[in-house]
Length: 107
Image 1 (tube, rainbow, N blue to C red):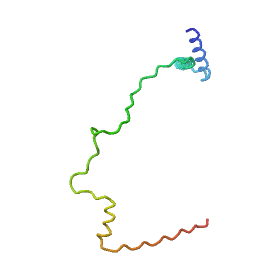
Image 2 (image 1 turned 45 degrees about the vertical axis):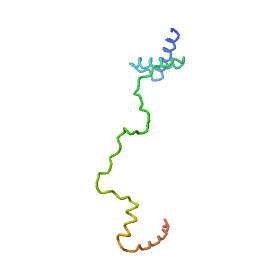
Image 3 (image 1 turned 90 degrees about the vertical axis):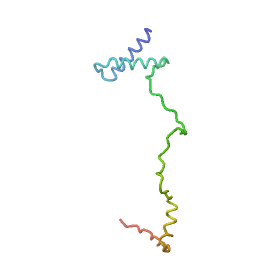
Image 4 (image 1 turned 180 degrees about the vertical axis):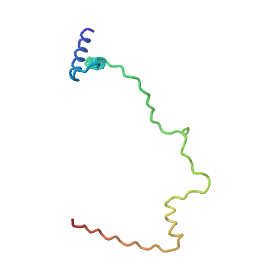
């Protein structure tokens, strides 16, 4: 125990010097040095308790589902709406004009 305390003291002194000899930081330096000695000796440090993580699971039947569409007029799909639109207008589809390529401007 004596040699461990001496090693902590040496580490704390080195930390204090490396930080420019600040006043009032003794407890923090000592704690840092203690952790260094524990890591050096292979002694596990006590970790603070953390929240338990939720396991990733697939939704089950008990999981609430997204809202369903209100009962009333059924909604048509977009594909159906696109195919029906030209037929309902009664006009023939006009061919599209080909695009002309852009010309590079000299700068």
